[in-house]
Amino acid sequence: MYMNTLLPPAHSVLFGETEISFSLSYVDRKTLAIHVYPDGKIGVDAPFSTDIEKVYGKVKKRASWILKQQRQFESYPAPLPERRYVSGETHRYLGRQYRLKVIEGLGEAVKMTRGMLQVETHNPKDSLRVQRLLQAWYRSKALIVFTERYTQCVQRVERLGIYHDKGFQLRFMSKRWGSCTGKGNIYEEEKVQKTILQNGVLVLSMPGNLQRKCAIKSKQKNAYPQKSNPKNVRSLLAKEREID
Image 1 (cartoon, one colour):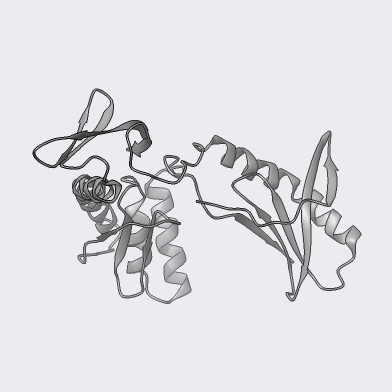
Image 2 (cartoon, rainbow, N blue to C red):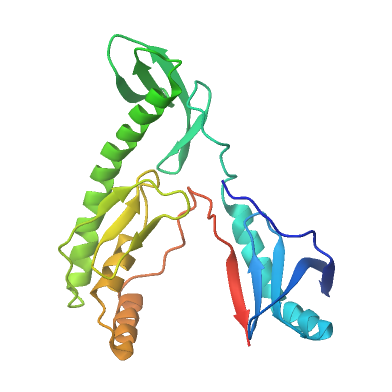
């Protein structure tokens, strides 16, 4: 779960009638950076000896961007508490919330019934076993969803002369929806079930030449409308704007 370790805000600027409060840290860097965190707090990292009035000016100049990031974080679902895998907990699947119901049974199975995620196991009090059963269920569902999405994305980018045949791997990730490596491997978060696989395929297919990268990005942007980030998982990373 995301935890903010910022110091209490000790500075503020006015943007119209809106007060923007932020914490300020002087660090060994050449540029000033503004961070907006998922809880709405703002942190500023400034080079040593930066004049405070200059800091205020930079924050005020980026006020519109700051407020935009705060509104975006506010639109995300609230982060779920730490999982205990007991009946009554809320778990998410494909952007919706479901109550967990753990029951005792002769076999072991997970199924969706009447708007609930029902886990049947020999010992309902064994939360570790319930967790493993639920994760296995998520993995099986994720494999179906991502296989379909991957096939569609590969077909789309082939029109741009981009090819990817290495498939993808499923992993449980605590701080991201997915990642890719320079070796052509795509890793996806199992519980998200919804991500932009196409971006991973595009990035992995790009050679090092910058002009080639720009050309592919331009083609991709013109070929397909931009989509917003999935909101079924709250972002754990801050939005940062670096300023010269």
